[in-house]
Image (cartoon, rainbow over all chains, first blue to last red; front, side):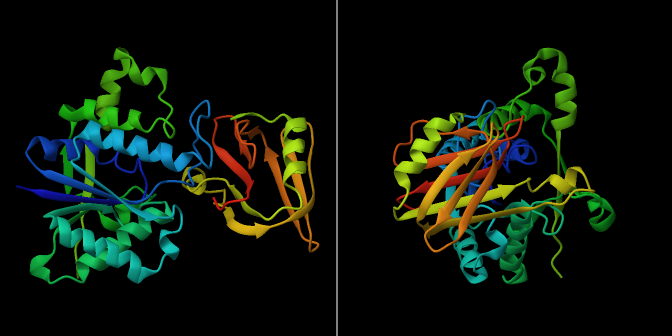
Length: 216
Length: 115
């Protein structure tokens, strides 16, 4: 059975770029573990109209993440307990050690994370960098594949075209359900739910792109 | 959260003065600001769970509101752009500023336990 590990810093980092691919893996029998580094407690979105605040947000986002995992079919969720926005400042030995523990426990064939340096948010870049450090420190024959998401301006000029493109149109309902789970973060435009725009939505969200990280 | 009622917030500020508190103060314009518009700068800061004790605290303005706290050792805490407060809190103060689209830009929390 295929074992897959997802290492991302924020609840909702999975939904737009990865949820369809995960649903597809799970449909094919894979077991997926999602290690989410923070509770997204520093997010600016509070719902529209606001229903969360700085105190209630971490608990609300935890519940949203559990719903999203349920919608996608993810079997295991691990909350690693780091603080939102602080990943790049975290004690690197502690951060890498926690990620290494999860990798040793799950023994994944594939890890999904962000491409360090090309994922815009400092937490994204720092999470991807930690995964690359940890996997790069393993013996070449024991390394899982690292598939990374990139979306910073100019990323294709720097790292080329994605080598993995997954058609996730069959799993668009899983993906939309994942997005809807994070209701404090994404205010669903009315059109998003209407049939007339379904085709446009499917074409926009229907492909997910990854770069396989090349270790030197 | 509800739109700030300054009279109510002032009562809360008065009730917490001269007490050992923790403060959380932050301002942010969002990690994606320069991703969406290169001419702009991503700027943010926060200070969290710092012990604080104020001798005077007041809310000012006609909305959005400003809050200033005069600290016992001569320091100050200031926040501007506050729009919402949590009306259910009695032993803590939760003040936030939300933009039109609901995004948080500023937060000031005061309470006897860490946040």
